[in-house]
Image (tube, rainbow over all chains, first blue to last red; front, side):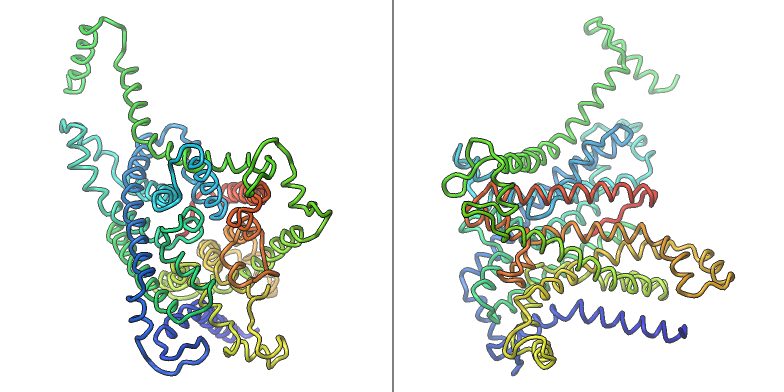
Length: 265
Length: 322
């Protein structure tokens, strides 16, 4: 085989794959501006589906739920995950195998098993005690559970990257534990915390399966709303809301990435 | 005498004065450390145990209970759920659930193979490009997976709907009858799975290709190996750990997939995830759903075990896939 042709073939295959990867997203975005009510023919540019969105009370409340869920769960996960991350670093010489397994469990468990076991558990607790009624509360609990590991791992890797003598120095200067946390630890890991927050936020907004199974009748988030809209039948309105979500998540992801890069330098 | 020595001494004196007990500074420090570990780690550990480990254990228990009214589990213990999963129902044996199981296995296998076929050249091509382009190219592969899975699948529904160019092409070729869409079908599910999991394979394969020892390839060429032989003996074995890691990352979640078969598969494209979800969402039979979930858990643990073995062979270095 000719070497140059081989390379050219590879290049063609690369661009084909890129088209394959971006085509579905491009179609959704393109047809969100379609004047006609059709998923097959683009007749002209219009913003009518976007205007229609903001008159839809269900979508407004879904956006509200999504944001409340993402912000509250990310803040809780940040506090708990940050503590674990520091604990893992400080005690890294001990045998913490059980902790590592515990932290990886939410990451490796298939979404559907995760969602269903929590749903079954919450339903039973609710029947027995009246607590944990399926709704935004149970969704926050579930989201915190899958966000904790990511926060912990980001914070841990930030601490590992630090010079250990910094900790000695803070101690030698007679800083009280409180001062050490406020003036040394938090400022040094601030970039990691911000990046972990954005990652948690993105994961939360992006999640469908776990939210779907832990939600109640009045706590639909955007992905859940989109899901039920699709189930009812394809409408161009879904394209518009999906395009807004693609934009929002891309923005959050880019911010997290940029902050992470700044951390590295 | 250094300051820390003085501190230790004074602390010891304080301890001795306080109770005269023979607590050494060392054991005191150990207690402090243990307390510190407890304080930092226990909130998160407790959270995961209460809200994930307990529910999973409960789910496993449900699988061994019998089906009560409204599909809720009740005593006595039984293995009916597993019998039903293999097809034994109230009306005798019917192959429905077994078909779903086999279809899940087949779809997982097929999509994993296809993902490998696409990802292998892509990962290789990225390593042949200039260094400054490589991170951007990897990013380009990963970025679509940041979008919500429901939206991505919805994109494919748009593309495969009746009357679209792809459907027209397929009906012109006689693959589907006119005015039909390419979905719902098993083909659409396979396509959706390949689309969804491609980045999960490209990343570990790229990592393997980047570490490739080219001296071995040159040695093969010096010995007049044909390109195919050089690839098979010098390149492929070196990329095998990355390939296997990718297979685990693709096959395990594919086996438990819910969204893609639900939207692209229709009734005849159902996979295990849909079977499980229906038992809970419709409230028809929790124990049966839990039995299906146990199958997924088993698959996950096999995957994790394999990953650990591969990790050892790779010599550490874990990829965190976002």
